[in-house]
Image 1 (tube, rainbow, N blue to C red):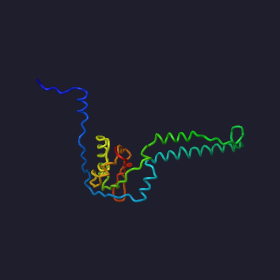
Image 2 (cartoon, rainbow, N blue to C red):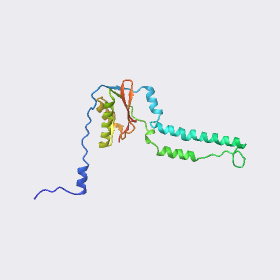
Image 3 (cartoon, rainbow, N blue to C red):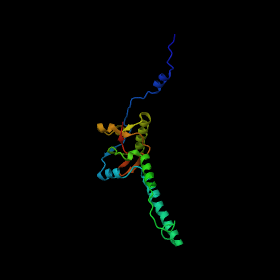
Image 4 (cartoon, one colour):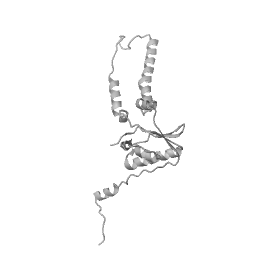
Length: 197
């Protein structure tokens, strides 16, 4: 009698859960420079958030728009000859706590990585844009397969030696990563490397 394979749910799940052993090989053939971050760059990374677009929207929505509204309201009051409040002619100050709660909700639901400090790793400068994009593509593949790529994996891809701690920090998402032109070549700008669980 011939041997039949198990058709149970558990058996099929075990066959689909196979994840190959992680092998990270160098994808760069050109020259690679490892550059330590200077003091100014480290300070900038601490104080300037990664999500600069959110800073722009905050400045516009919470500072510029209310200021313009106040200017228009003051102009209308001056034109109509009304001083103080439009209600009852009395000048009163009213404290609105709504903004406090809205800001707190925005911060709670915002990006958690803003509160955590990232791991300080060296900037890598590559000879060509194509090789830098190849490294990013390979990092995306590693995230798709293993849900994570470490700083050590990044260093392996470019052929730079690191240390043991590089295995404990990395990324689960590099959608915001980009290749930028610098004086010596092309640098891969990555988000902050966070502790891996």
